[in-house]
Amino acid sequence: MKTRSSLLLAVLAIALLSFSEHKRRSAMKSFTNSKLNGPINIIVDKSDYELRVYDDDGWYATYPVVFGSKSLEDKMMEGDRKTPEGDFTIVAKRPHEKWQKFLSLDYPTTADREKFNMRKAEGLIPGNAKIGGGIGIHGTWLRDDMAVDYYQNWTNGCISLKRSDIDDLYSYCPVGTRVTIQQ
Image 1 (cartoon, rainbow, N blue to C red):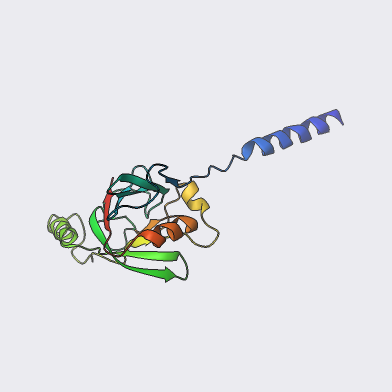
Image 2 (cartoon, rainbow, N blue to C red; image 1 turned 180 degrees about the vertical axis):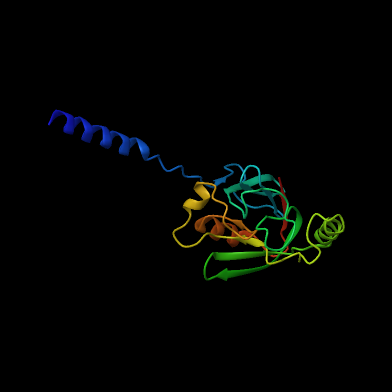
């Protein structure tokens, strides 16, 4: 009986210790810059898993994000699930039935086409590869914000925020906003 109680206690202790605390990543906003002033710019830092918003007064907000592939390298071709790097513009905004909101980027740009063609000529990607498109900034699946908390890259190359964060960004981010994606 004593062995059975000890075994039960050990199993219970292991079970309790195996559950880790949920590490919630949250958006941050400036206390000193509470109202947007002038045009905004977005910088997406892939290595920090952050989307930062700036206006004429400086830093305005930071949102936690995730991407496509676990590899944070630059997008090479359609289907590689990598998030492209470079300078882009938000060209459209719309509600999205799966991901809450969608801010469409102008990928591929002329610079992206040049990189793609150079890589193709150097044999880094197959000759029949396509450049891809449809890259944007959007929310997560319903009840899946935890993917952002746990750095779970899941998109096909887009940038994904928590649903409440994409609602916030969408509310003040106009078409024409400049977006820089960097490593």
